Length: 446
Image 1 (tube, one colour):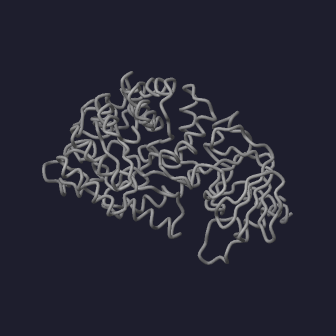
Image 2 (cartoon, helix red, strand yellow; image 1 turned 180 degrees about the horizontal axis):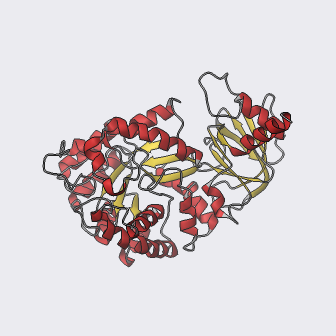
Image 3 (cartoon, one colour; image 1 turned 30 degrees about the vertical axis):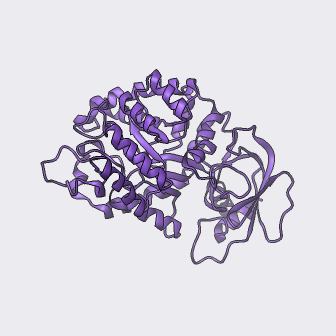
């Protein structure tokens, strides 16, 4: 089997998609794995998964091998659904103290090029689906198109286009002289004022490729001139956004740190609260009552906290980052213990892309059970996204998988660096086969 895998890798059969390669076999049979299907149910031992034309055909034990099928032996490995990160910024990267510099020295093309590398690293980290919650000038939509067309490797994407902010709020560029890089301070730039412009902003984003609407109902850490607790958007504006999005079949996710902004957004009907730093008991009660998800993004909270302590953030962000890190931990535990629905999200782009899997450790270190953390990044995340083709290992869904050697229930950190990643029935990463190929090559050269 070792030499078969190595030969398959070297000839491209198990490698990433290529327009020059002949058509893939219709069937791939993944044999003998322990399967965690994303539902939260007990793992299935020695299970087989049959893939046909990029989708899951059958899950069972001792499945027959169809003629011409590619067979992959996964004995000793665990097979999970491709992971989902509900809060990414693929076209952003950590800026450090010079955060404002890019606003006046770089354009959309720079962000798009960064996004190509970030998308590949995210996919190879095991995240086959992401919700990208904010990018300027529709570069996230361009990246999604490039991935969907097979031009570049990357995860399946739900894009938000511009995140909506008030003028001078977390999504606007502050700290520059008046007139510098301000552009259009209206709904076309995601800066609507008043309920009517809020409705126009939703329609405009939807027209240009938004699959989710992202709003900011409070200030943020890495923006100047706005307090974390400060409310952004009036009740009327929030309701207009959610109402218009609902009419168009879109969900709304909401960046919110302060309790007042969290409560207002939940009452307006957003699908998820992103960050949720200062959750109080009423926030938790309202979220449970409305079925609102929390997307914790502890990875970003810990990253900005550690960098603030060393002075490696812009001066205006340091005090806020030092406040956010510890409080996020307490709020996560409060929400988890109360039974608030939790979906996996990291805020990758604030910290380096490809390190998304570290969020599992941040969740389980605070008391969440490993299986619950896995479900938050699979079945629960798919429910939040409203996408029933991802997040579970069951017939008809995309054949997107993560493979690890060992048991992630016993060692959740195995998910920080998967052994193999499959998207649409094709290996986009297989460290095992690469190791085997290298070993076979060394043996052949002796």
